Image (cartoon, rainbow, N blue to C red; front, side, top):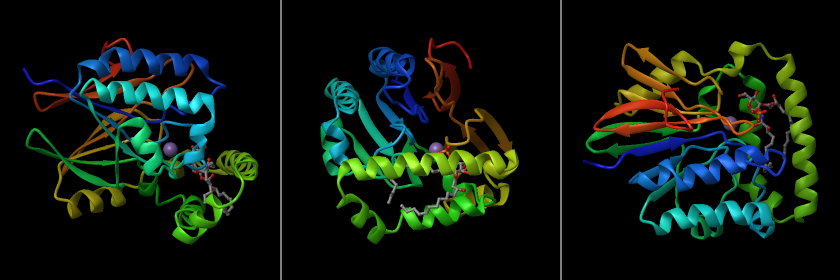
Length: 243
Ligand code: LP5
Ligand code: MN
């Protein structure tokens, strides 16, 4: 019987949430060990301000645990999220994983699946899309990465405050994916299955063109994952029970 393929996203790992960090270590030593591949679809970290983040013990331990799983023969892939969109080759090599573009079309045992973090699909959130265009610009990123880590850390803390304040002003629907953006993306890639995270609204949506799966976020030791086995996708809590 083929081994399952697992999908996780939105763990937002940080020293401030030790229960989720422990849950991630348990996941790597539990369900992930029995998988043939693990897809991490962004926001694994609360934020990643450049690969010198590896110099922090907390991050180094997470990355070493992922590398340990890779050594067991599990293929690991990483699509960046809106919190950790600055991973580089140093991070990828240390974690033993492969960085993928957002979106990426993957072939899972003959089934074409499109994977994405999901933030690019939130097209009604005009303020966020403007912000995204700025911070995804290569020149902005090169300049940012050239500045001292302490300064970058301070800027991200300020950005988090602004983001939190601006999110409180936004209607909830604005922070969800836009149906037309989903339809267009799936049509463009000729897929019937889309898997993404970001919105923290775990669900399986039946669409005219197929299925849209939203991966559960993790918080205070609770979370979940998607499992593809024998061409069937299912959603699970961390103890393996149905989500
Ligand atoms: O993160 P979350 O889920 O709370 O909200 C997101 C969107 N917010 C963000 C911002 C991040 O939270 C900030 C931390 C990112 C770390 C990145 C490190 C490197 C940064 C520098 C790179 C060069 O992603 C939020 C969405 C929400 O998801 C739902 O989709 O609504 O969007 C916002 O809050 C954006 C605001 O609407 C606009 C923010 C104004 C800030 C303007 C500064 C622009 C210049 C920045 C230059 C460095
Ligand atoms: Mn996100």
